[in-house]
Image (cartoon, rainbow, N blue to C red):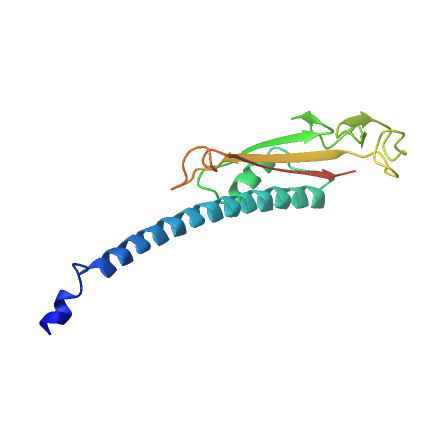
Length: 167
């Protein structure tokens, strides 16, 4: 028996230390993976809230509650920090109205070109489209990671935007 004990050459507890180190690396890796997953969850929550606000605006397109849309997005996002929300109509921020709307065509460069409501859009605009009143809702928030160092995803701006034609 004495020979058996002497053959271990001082390796007593090596397996315990290896297990402890491997467990530590596993948990650090798992926490980092949860941080990255949290980023995608927050981005999805913001996208879903902006999308829900656009559906609500489209459903009430004759009398859109433009003043309450930012609050709608913030409440629907369910984020720890309320997202910043901006509303623009035909590319002009905070110029949305429910009466006497001026229509536009969406150009191929992403800007808006003034046009007669219901009229055909000309060259340089989306092919086959007609002029309308476009609402753009943009939500943004900053991601705060638990474990990731600054520069990876920590501090990254999450922005989601939706444009819907109301008229």
